[in-house]
Structure formats: C-alpha cells, structure tokens
Image (cartoon, rainbow, N blue to C red; front, side):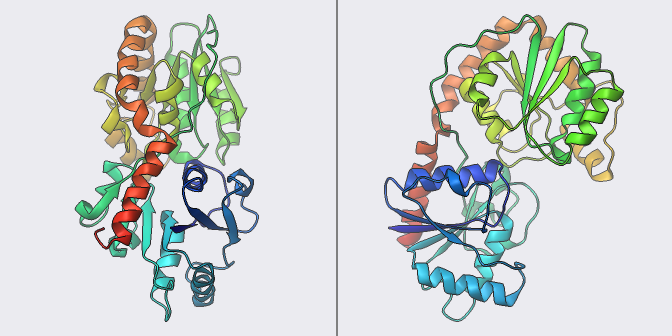
Length: 358
C-alpha cells in the first residue's frame, strides 16, 4: 500500500505535527509519500523512510496550480491520497475532477476544526479529529472520527515550585484567548505564576497586556519548546482557554504528563473531560473580548477571566483531590491517544476505502 499525504501549510502547529507523526509511524508499515510546500518549517521532522515531494506553488483556486497538482499526484502514483485541512482538501478535490484525476486513487480529507468549510460536504471520504468536528459536516454519519495523539516518552519526575504554577501550551493566536489566562492572574489571591509555551501573532499584544497589568513577575513567555513533557510534569495545572478547537494536541499531552488540566469545553475536550475540569460558565469579572466574533464565542463557551480564576482557585484549594480525580481520567483515556493507536485507526479507514466499503 502506498499512501500520499497532502498538506498545504508552511508553519508548525498541531495539524502539521499530526501529519508528521502519522506519516512517520505509517512509514514503518507501508510506503508513504508527502506533498508539502517548498521550504515548509517541518519538512526535516519526517522519518527518513518518508518520501517528500514539493507541492506546486500558487493559489488553491488557480486552475494551472490544480492541474500541476493532479499531474504530480499521478506521477507519484499512490494507492490512496490523504489531504489534511481545508486548503489541501480543496486543491485535491479540484484535481480529482480534472481529466485523468488522481490516476484512479481514492481521496480522503481530514477536517481539523469546527469552522464551517463546504469542501468537506462534497468530499466522499472524510475523517474528523473529534465527534464535535464531525458534527460540522453535512451528513456527519459518513465521517470517520480519528482523534489526534502524542508520541509518549518517559519523563523523570519533576520537582514542583512552591509557587502554584500553571502552564499553557498554545499557538499565540487570537482565538486561543491567552489574554483570558493573563487577566485571570489578577484575580488570584495566592502566589501563582503562568508559563506560556508557544509563539504566534499575538505575542507582542500579550506582552503589552502583561506590562499593563503589572504581571511581569507572574507571567513568563517561554517561546517554542521541545521539553513540553517536562514542563507539564513540573507544573501544578495545565490551562487552555481556546474558543475554537477541533482536537487540541496540547490537552492530549496533558493526559499523558499533567497532574491536572483545566480547559474550555471546545472540540474534543468535552468528549473526554468530566465537568469539573471544564471551564464553561461565565464568570464575574466582566471582561469582554475585543471582537464581535470573539464575544459570541466567549458567551458560548464561558471564556472569561473570572471563570478561570475561580476554577484555578478551586484546584489550588483542593489540589490533592483534583490530582486524584484527574489520574482516573488519564487511566481511562490516555492509551487511546498515542500515535500508534491513531495510525491503527487511519489504517482501518484506508483499508475500508480501498475495499470500497468507506
């Protein structure tokens, strides 16, 4: 079996990591190729057994670009094409409708988030990274749900600080609402600090907010890190305030390494975590997000600094009980979210599609 993955983004985030991990794990079982943009920041992360090809440059809606993509796929001659996220899925879908198409190879598209995207209503074979994502596709019963995962490794026990420490693992984008976590620090009545691991367009604005609130000694930006398991193990609680997720790799890492996770009930979080670990009730602080879109989303999921401050305080005041309860969640779920288990699930989908049953 020869699987071709197609991805159209240059940056490094959860979706790109998923492609790297699935392709690399799958390459130990069958032949794997990947079409990705020239100079993509993650091209060096694939296993040596994965064959890389350059995606044709140009707009996804340019007929010449799509024609070149179709010809390149036919030259690679895979048994099945797997496109990831909206842009790549649109390009492959249009390529499949040109004369000669994909050379007879069936096509799977993976939807990564809950934003409406009509292309997934038209693709015959769709996978979604959570039940919540699947529900955003017309006729969700035809969508195969395959979660994302993490590559698990051993971590030495980390000594915890005397200061109650929270860790956020996130891309610094507006909808991740890191500003909510920063503002929540103002309402905490005990020594605490917030560590933020990630980069993105919002970093400058967030650093300004930290200075404005006088939190320079309590909030630290760590940038991109490769030692996330150790950081999670050393923190008291992992926090995530996103208003929109398909299935967060950050909280999956929390299932493996964190003592406690507090997250908004978005995407796959509500499919895994009991209510006590979800921050979904609007709090008292009265802070409102900047944009109208964010206000609607915040009202829906309760993304509010006061709500987070209250939840963090509850964990702080009864930490042992929360650690014990979260250990039960980890024991119940974490084996489901390794890349081996996820690749097994994708292989089953591939076999079903190739056999004409998908």
